[in-house]
Length: 112
Length: 114
Image 1 (spheres, rainbow over the protein chains, first blue to last red):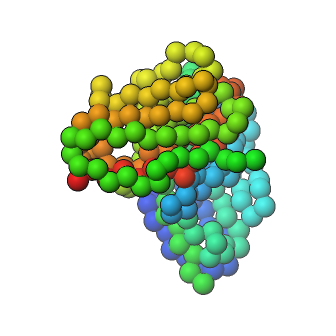
Image 2 (cartoon, chains in turn orange, brown):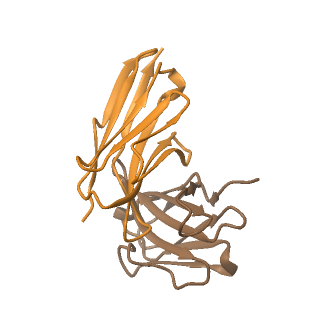
């Protein structure tokens, strides 16, 4: 059974710093792995999706990597801004079905 | 175009009452998902609709939970005889199809059972 873990549960850093959020999964038979952002009172926004055959994806200041063999994905945020403050969730989709298995999220606070 | 919408945004109910939560997916999206997010927890899959196929109800936590999707569009999640442990944010998402990886989420309905 797939389990997804995100560490740390919360992170607070000064504006301008580069930072890394971690996501680990127990079953390497994944179809893809996605990173989402959740703002209070709002739904989830898809940030990056990495297919199982890919090693990384980039969008602006965001870079997500995937290492299936070690069961890890990281989300790198460059030059962090207060507007990046949100909860970041990762979700793994299995090979055999469409269901997403979710981590509990990392709450990120960027201090001005 | 409009995104996924959900109503109500907040619902407070008394234990034992029934509630209905509504989801309007993005027009043309054939796949619709319901998730539950409890405080400090990850999202929990509840149910999945794909076109006219029978829904996957494997995530529903008890027989008090049911959902339907009328006309392949709007979906309603019904919780009967609500319990305090049902308190959570209920999120709906839609996508272009089972092979379409990206799910688009609504803002959620926050349910509080007193």
